[in-house]
Amino acid sequence: MFSESAIKKIGRSETILILTGAGISAESGVPTFRGENGLWKKYKPEELATPDAFRNDPVLVWEWYRYRRDIIRSVEPNPGHLALAAMEETVPNLVLVTQNVDGLHARSGSKRILEVHGNIMRSRCSQCARTLPADEETWRNGVPVCECGGMMRPDVVWFGESLPRQVLEEAFTAAEECDVCLSIGTSALVQPAASIPWHAVQAGAYVLEINPESTPLTPHIQEFVKGKAGIVLPELLRQVREQQQKNPGR
Ligand code: BJW
Ligand code: ZN
Image 1 (cartoon, rainbow, N blue to C red):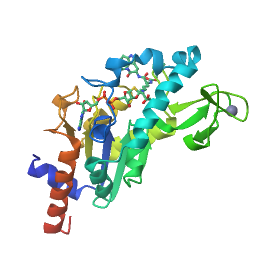
Image 2 (cartoon, rainbow, N blue to C red; image 1 turned 30 degrees about the vertical axis):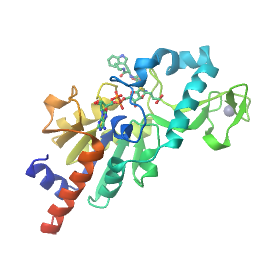
Image 3 (cartoon, rainbow, N blue to C red; image 1 turned 90 degrees about the vertical axis):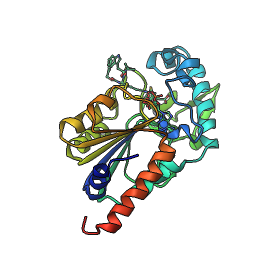
Image 4 (cartoon, helix red, strand yellow; image 1 turned 60 degrees about the vertical axis):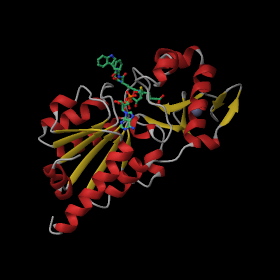
């Protein structure tokens, strides 16, 4: 499944950067965006995931996000999330950058997480930018409202919006400093997150991708492992631990 050199590189690395996308949560039952059963087959991104869509019909946008919150509340982290959380113990410095808004990495015990597209279980005031966890929202006529009277919106990054600046800077710094980069369960299409592993490639890191399908990144990296994250990642963790036990000096 993995080359011996990949296992050695991971087992001996000081800094690993991991980028995850919707595919890592697919085995938990959270739909991905693209592909046969993806959300964008059934729903139009321009009607639901843009600032204009929210201005035009906030109630419709919130209906969609409530539907997705309900799915996320009903699911559990899968063996892929759990393997990444356990991997934090095997590397001195592991930075987990996720495009996912589902919070499943935190629920599985990962600690250093950079959520570049926000979190669906939080809302943000469209007037004063105050944020609130979902369970503290006050709803009026199908939309949560802020103390200041403004409408709350989901605290996620829509198309055409900037990603949180500091979070993104930390992700790119990690990409430039890492020895190994893993790109897992992402179509590698949505910018600027998709360029994070490219930065790692250019900085000379060993880049490994895990996905049942190839992506635009695949031809440019050292190793592509074709498969589901929930199967591949526990096996990767097992082999890295075995390698470290055989060579405790790193
Ligand atoms: C498995 C698996 C298993 C399945 N195990 N794997 C033209 C060129 C370049 C850029 C642009 C362009 N036109 C517009 C842009 C900019 C745009 C963009 O990149 N668009 C592209 C689609 C072309 N980007 C933006 O707008 C960003 N902002 C920005 O650029 O600001 C500057 C700017 C300002 C003003 C004007 C223009 C630019 C913001 C992007 C925000 C993305 N937001 C979303 C929604 C978040 C909120 C929500 O959840 O509702 O983020 S869109 C959606 O895509 C979501 C995801 O995080 C993101 C990435 O998707 P991801 O995670 O890769 O999922 P999928 O479904 O695509 O792929 C799943 C993968 O898993 C597949 O590969 C499967 O094979 C695999 N898989 N099962 C492992 N079991
Ligand atoms: Zn407010």
